[in-house]
Amino acid sequence: MDNILEKFSLKGKVALVTGASYGIGLSIASGLAEAGATICFNDINQDLVDKGIENYKDLGINAYGYVCDVTNEKEVKELVNKIEKDLNGIDILINNAGIIKRIPMVEMDVEDFRKVIDVDLTAPFIVSKAVLPYMIKNNSGKIINICSMMSELGRETVSAYAAAKGGLKMLTKNICSEYGSYNIQCNGIGPGYIATPQTAPLREDGHPFNSFIISKTPAKRWGDAEDLKGAAVFLASSASDFVNGHILYVDGGILAYIGQQQQ
Ligand code: NAP
Ligand code: GCO
Image (cartoon, rainbow, N blue to C red; front, side):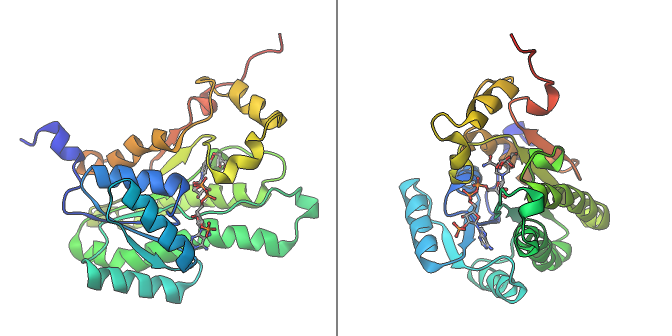
């Protein structure tokens, strides 16, 4: 019988974390590396990839960085082929790359809406479709989609993002349904409000959203990208081999909490 901690080991596994030069992706990738995985990541230009490689080196991680726009199916297929040549197939995929546009719906250009859907929903489809053949052949694989509070809740100005993240929740359940018989587990992580460049505008001094989120979070703080590492290692490891189609919310309790009455 394996020691239970062995079940969380990722030794010998190759992980691709998309959009992971910094932010949540970098943190999740570093957690997977600490558990033994070999890390591959991509970003949309060489400068960011080079900066990402330095960021990983600073963490003591020898990561493989590639230029790839995850919305471009040709580039994604080339990326997966390169990784398969450099390292072998991809055992763990983290669909992390994402954007947000905070614009009132009636003022949002349809092109802005389409761009968010393209990066946050269509790209996870494209990348998952590219890595599944190896996982099917291998009869083993882990796909983790980075969902959101907006997979469950709406709010002003984030119509495209909420539509994408809601769709990503259901894409997660569908990949589980379609490929679970090949010992492939597809789950999601739903971060709460995490302090990264994506939320920096909401955390500026005096921004009302800053105190609002702290009041809506039972933990009474913004999340740190480090808070996501444990959930990622769990869902990427054999410790979660019978967990499938599940969205694991790492949100400090936001989704459980109706909020405190005005004092
Ligand atoms: P971030 O700081 O904005 O980082 C997003 C990353 O995705 C960047 O490296 C970005 O690269 C990359 N990216 C964007 N478009 C891409 C494309 N077409 N191809 C390849 N890479 C692309 O965001 P984050 O806060 O770390 O969020 C990471 C993920 O977590 C996103 O899916 C986000 O929706 C989700 N999330 C975030 C929070 C939060 O509170 N921060 C909470 C829940 C979920 P560039 O810099 O080159 O654009
Ligand atoms: C926003 C924030 C959120 C976070 C995250 C919450 O404008 O509401 O950017 O959407 O990014 O998705 O889970």
